[in-house]
Image (cartoon, rainbow, N blue to C red; front, top):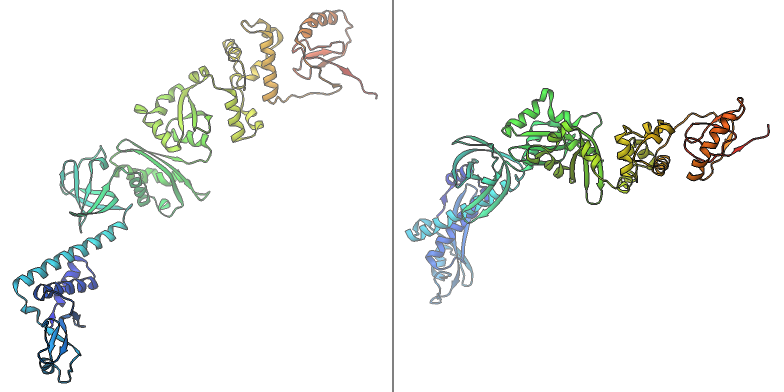
Length: 503
């Protein structure tokens, strides 16, 4: 006897969202469970569905001779078989239609339990597949209740949970409040399917920007990295694949419309959008925004240690409240950043070799030498010499080279040997461009400080007693006035030799 279950099948498809194939399988399992409950096993039971969604159950039995029936469940006497089919012969198999309505209450109850269990498993698998594909996406639900700090959110087909650790400290909710969150986990548990939501994950901010900024969604502007202190501050490093697109401007939007929408969704959390740069020095400068960084010095490239130098007025802004800004910058660039003021930096004893190694890593030596302007920045400079010169108002190399011999001699706490060593460092690391009129060719003689000191007085006396028409030249090293009878420069002490060319 066939049963028309088309209405029930249609209702299940609409209410539970279960496919027709799975419903047919469930009905089949239900009838087989009832058959097994009545006859002990269902090995010979067959369930068939018609095109009109009618279901029938048959018992497949073997035809045996008279008085040869030992198992009435799987065997049938030939006379009974011929009443159903006159052409039946011994040894053949025949399908005998069963009437499901003849099953007693216990058998029907067993079938119902099997059906409910099958439908629950099917629905769980279906929802699991649906939500598993949505991990990392934003979903909107409504606040239902709270228990032990965990918020239960109505997601329509099922209920999600928003644990306490994934809630922003800025946010409070009430019943039926709209909640937008990120799906982070989908788990099968004995109690059912569990969907874990989060509003503190960095991917939640990324997903919000994809919704608000079309350039981020279509990958014209890409987010390099996001670091976040939920409820307080978020830093994003962005870059563009096109030269004509400003990544920061695209994220901020016209008059800040886009960024304000993101801030509103995050309940007023501060957001810093900065440009990613493959050069770590520029990236560190950008990462410490909104503070203005004057210079960044790489202390140890292998250990990712860097020093950021800022003005006194920018120090508190660069560090941030309770060190939040510099802490987020460290995580964003993956470097250990130490922030110092100009005065603190001058007091530090940074190895000159590390500075020079950094210069060779990020550029050639000539480019680095052009950047040196202060005496304290010279590789290998004596800190005592630099301090004494700074006390006398000489900070830059240009100021030192402009001093006369009398000015240098008048300085206290610095010796002639220290000044000569400083000059050699300047010659080695700083390129000095001078305008010279070369009428003669000069060749340098190795420096001898004692000879230079001894002949300085003698050359002055000879110049006073010499002829007034003596020709004067400029020292090729320091530019001081010299004459042909001098063997050492009276200013810098370098040895001199004159050679004449035949005209």
